[in-house]
Length: 199
Image 1 (cartoon, helix red, strand yellow):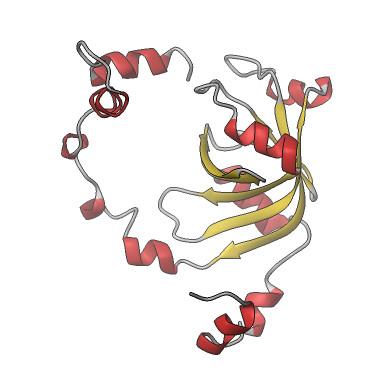
Image 2: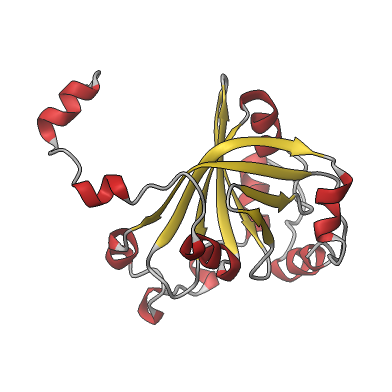
């Protein structure tokens, strides 16, 4: 088991200058454009009890760039577990990974975060189907474009990588089994119809 960073660096070379210098302390025009084009982000949060990575999606531009240090993310309707929100309230931090379909590079942002009910921030999402109860405001501390290697290895966007939904049981069937419920599980069609009310 590796227990120190010194042990790690006995196995790995030092990062190259380019990998270090590309880390920015604010959003330049390329980072801002990446966010504007992204319909999907993973929010990573944690607290003393554990960690969470939560997917969030919407039309490109669903995350608002207020300025070169500030992002605002609406809390869209979900499962009401509030894992990310609770973690942010407790830790005051979040990491974001932005994806754009068809593009292998990603954008990583780390920073201070808080949950807000500020009316001015909520109004940024006034045109949404459902106004959010809260928003997540992230103050950028680190921003950098991540190389394409992981997506190239996975071929995530390639047509041949796509799988038919039928390779897995329906979500209803899987959860039904996991929690030991009796009766008939929710069908895929019923689930999609239910989700459509919140999208």
